[in-house]
Length: 129
Image 1 (spheres, one colour):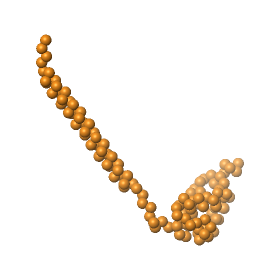
Image 2: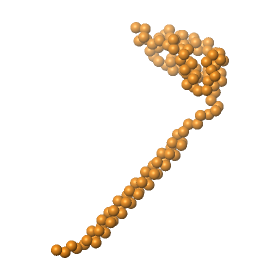
Image 3: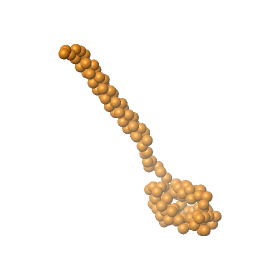
């Protein structure tokens, strides 16, 4: 029995192998390109903290008002609690607040101090029942 076209079969297999190799190379290049794009996106998404963040009296007062606004936004807050918190903010003295609880370098520190002050004032309707 004679075998014909052995070299033709080998050549076809070699082409398939080359095509597979080319596909793998192309995939690797595409993955590298995607990683490069992700790296660029990560660079664009970074946040630079400004040294100009205001932790003086005006900045602290604004942060305190924002903190209280989040509390007052809760619909389950009792009327008595709402009135106490609003009264506190009406008499809020940023200089005194900074002197007692500061100095502040982050908004988290301001929020923690505000929590310490207002936590006893916050009562929700379901807690009174």
